[in-house]
Amino acid sequence: MSDHSSSDLEAQPLKRTKTSSGAKSLPDHISYKTLAEKFPRLKEYLTETKTIDFQNPDAVRTLNQAILRVYFDLDVYLPANSLCPTVANRLHYLEWIRSSILVDFPPSQSISGMDIGCGASCIYPLLGVQVLNCSFVGTDINSESIACAQKNVAANHMQSKIRLFLNSDQNVTLPLDAEGFPSNEADADGSVFTFSMCNPPFYKSQDERQQLARFKARLPSLDTNGKDEELYAEGGEEGFLTRMIDESVKLGKHIKWYSTMVGKKSTLLLLKAHLRQSQAKHIREGTLIQGKTTRWVLAWTFLEQTRFITNPISSTQENTYILFKDIMSDLKISIEAKDAEHMRFVCQAREKTWTRQWRRQQKRNEHTQQESQQINCFWNRGIPAIY
Image (cartoon, rainbow, N blue to C red; front, side, top):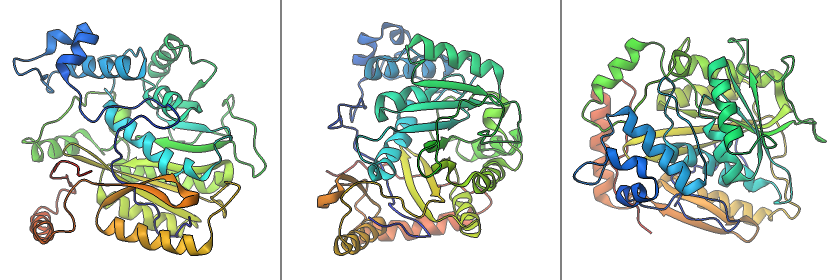
């Protein structure tokens, strides 16, 4: 497997099945009625059609608590004044890390992650321990969020796996050099973390958020109430993540792979250009589609070598894989490595991208987008997956 200076391993939605390692995951379909039977508190929010009202913040919080308890054995308190994480969306990001980053490391290697802005829920570290079997350091700039996150870690008996750090400098996103930071021991190449991840503030201000909300009013949405620092940042996500990239340049190899979620396609393009200027050695990106919401993942490293398994694939296999990956990427078909050494992969199509009808629809979508350039927003049409 090789990397490109532009992008690598275009990863789209992964089928939610239990992994061979026994890691927990979500089923393809969730029955709210069945879920409520296993988590009785959800029953009061079921509608006559056995779904829930996604405009009701209490219903959304209870739903996510039910999913975490039933499918991941996690007891998580989600305070009303903090961002309510969508479990499927967070899980999808972790699965991308596993299939696009951790696949380069031998199974015996100890994996450590850093979550930038863990929030009160501490959702990425808690899920990450279960899904990736790794340790985590979670950071946040809000003392109330850190206190709640600490209680969630303790409630699930994960103090030995998850450490938390209150970042007192709001101008720093990667506080590895801060006094008291619970850093790991550096390995041979100077790295203290295998990867970092971040769900950044997406908006510049409340006005920008309300403008986007009006544009998407006809689309179903989950509760997005949260603290200001969870929702807004100077310069929006572009400004926040540009600062993170600049900090990563200074930290260099201290983190093997830096990564973040991105909410706007336009931001993704700008960040990739900035990474090239910043001399990142390798860049990988992926697309996460959850219902009608699309997010992107961007990862970069300053390491020359990114593959650490003992028996690398041959150059002929590399060339074959590169061609295969490019074709699948053009068709928007996700690929998940099952056995990279022997070139075994699972492919999943979310749409019939190889048909003339799909190409015509794409042209119509592009025309519609051009008419709405003032708002950089894109969503998937939600056609069922093909297996």
